[in-house]
Structure formats: C-alpha cells, structure tokens
Length: 531
Image (tube, rainbow, N blue to C red; front, side, top):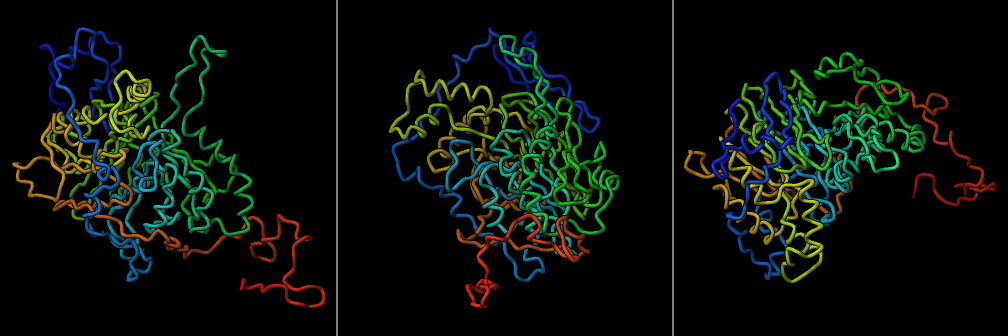
C-alpha cells in the first residue's frame, strides 16, 4: 500500500518526529495488508512558531450566519416515488446513494442539523423494489425524524454501524430498536461496533485499576434490559415471520467472524433480538462481507477521546464490475490511518467523509452569542481547546490531512460541522492554506482541476457512480406523516401475547376502569372505529 507523503519540519520526516514519543500505534492489519499507523505527538523540539496565522474571517455579517446558501442551490431529491411498489425512489443499477440524516456536533444541535447519522444504499433490486443493500452509520439524537421524512422506515434500518459509543452517535438507537416492529422490521437488529477499550481507572480513583466493560456487547446487553417494559408491552403485535435465515447462514452470508447471537432470550429471528457484532478496533479488519450484494465494510482505529473509536470503509463491487468506495471517519483527531485508507493502495476513494470542527475561538464566540472572537486566553476558548485536543480535527488540521492524500478523493465531505455561510467560508480559507480544493458544481476530472470538497448538512443526498458524483437536496415537508411501511410477505409467527390465534391487546392491562364505547344500557359513548 502506498504511504502518505512525508511531512517535514526542521528537516525531520514524520517518522523521525514520532521516535521517542511513545505514542505510535502498532501495525494495522486490514484485509491482510499491513498499514503502518504513525499517529502520535511530535517531540518537544518541533515548534510551530513559524506557521502563518490563521486566515482572517468575516464575523460581522449576521445574514451569513443564518443560512447555508450552497445547500439551498442544490437540485432537489424527492424521496417518495409512487411509481414503485415500495414508494422508494430507485437508485441506478450501479449507483451508491449517501444521505446525511444528521450532520452536526453536540451542543450545536439545531433545527437545521441533528446529530450524526449517514445512510448508505447501493444498487437496485427490481424484484424486491428495494436497494440491493443498505446501512446506517451512527444514529445520534433527532435523526429518526429525518429518516422518516426521507422515506426510510425503521424496517430498512437493521444493520447499524456505530463508530463509538458517545451519545451523539447512538442515542436514537433506543427508538430504532423499540419501534422497529411497528414499522416493518420483523428481523433482528444488528449493531456493529468496537469491543471494550481496555482502559483502567487512574490510581488516584476510589477503584484504581478498574476496567469497565465499555464495549458494544455490554452496551447492547444493558439497552436490551432497559427496554424490557417497552418490548413486552408491544408484543401483542407480530414481531417475527417464518423463514428467517438461521444464525450460521447469516454468519456465512455476511462474512461475520463469530456466530451472531442475541444478548437476551429472544427467539432467533424476532425483531426484538438485539445482536451485537463486536469489532477488534486495535487491529482493524473486515466487519461485513456480502458477496451477494458486493458490499465489503472494513474498519480501522481512529483517535477520539478514548481508545475504541473506529472509522469505516465501504467498498461496493457494482453489477458491471467496478468498485465504488466510501470512507466515514466519524469523530477523530487528524491521524494517519485515515490518510492511508484514503490513499487506498494508490487507487484512492470516491468519497471521503471526515469530521471537521470550527476553531475553539469560533466555537466559543458562536456559543456565547458574542460579536467578535474572544481572546485565546479566554476560559471558554481554553475549555474548547481542551475538547478539540482530546477529540477532533479543526479546519486547518483537516486541510493539512487532505493535502497528504494522493490521489485525492473524488469528493471530500466535511461533516460534524455547524454549517452556515460564514463558518463554511472561513473553513474553506483554512483548508486552502494547505491544499487546492474547490466547492461548487462538478467539473471534468481531467487532472487539472482541484479536488472537490463540500460541507454536509441534514438531507444532503450524494449520488455516486463512476461517471459522476452529484450533490442533491432532500425535498421534504416539515409535516410529512410517515415513511412508507412495507410489511413482509412471509407468514407471520403468532404474537407472544395472544388469544384465539390472534394478538391480544388486553393481555397485559386491566380494562375494568376503562370507559366503554357503549354503556350497560346500550347507549353509545363513542365509536369503536375511532370517529
């Protein structure tokens, strides 16, 4: 695999700078290829005093902080199609469709942007009138609203890939799990995510050396228990159908390392089966490999707040034999694994989705509703800088990271970012300090034009083929009632709480104090049909 360019400072290569830091990660095995992971701190002799100051940005134009004009100019995408049996807008046979259902960082969550979630669909199955395969990457608070508006029902959300277990990346999992059977998901919910971090409590704590089980399996076990009242109360309805593949068949079809198993005693195939698929974040590897649909999803460690965060790379072999690729870093500091994965052995990738945050000064100014940037010594700026240093890639660092990737991604998408005309314009200046990029309509990729970059916002749709990549704007109503529910055609299994061969809605309640629709004298109090 080709390595990223050498970065020199005071005549030292990057690898020289990492010697003695003690922070470099070990080798990363991905698909049998060893990637030298070079993340770490430069040693103390390296200084940034010669770096130019950050670009001057205009923060006095109030109107520029209230809209994201670029997104408004995109052509519309209509998610409902009445000409298909399922009401889903079809994809091209060789098309990958990426939809941002959430796109912002916590504490900046707002009406225009919910927390993180990316929905990926590939190809089109004419017989089923469905995408050939589909995946949810992260599911932060508020995103279910956008999934519903974009006509993605919970029945289509059975494979969730969680990059790390922060609340802004998994909090809507509760809703997806609990209400899945009500919107047609009558099969298990698979949650892919990292194994436990292996970090122990500091020596000065009450329980020094304590190792918490903070992995995906433990998370699913506890969430399943926490949702017990809900799942039992909804089990007067059908939650599974006959004919769901056996566990070993799913393992083989999806290329899973271990036999998939629910965390509790739910019968296999039931919609309330929650099935964790833990990933060895330390070494990386392949999470999902489905030769039937042509999708392979690999993962690699990234640097975010605590050991155990991963990035994902999706490769799809299209029906005509081409490969389309997408990387989703989720939250991370700038690090070399993303660079190496994006170089992709010299082949590059089609779409790189990478987090970016505004600088600590800007973050503090915006959150404090100030008229100008606070001082670098301001307590708020110091606090935001600490968060940045533990977890994130500010815009200048992201520009430098992008400059290390050759060939460049066909489209780079900055996400986890509070978009507006002013924040995006300032970020573009920072990125251009390091590499030649442009934001705008697609151009011919003749080698003379710079790489394209865009900033995601909720309901942005990206259509990817080998011929072109097109950004669209989801055209939806704020009052959209529901995503289309497509019920299975298989034979339903009798509900857990049933009577006379049907689900029994009265099995778990005491109706004695219920106001009857008709009183004892036959007088109609209200209609049973709801009117």
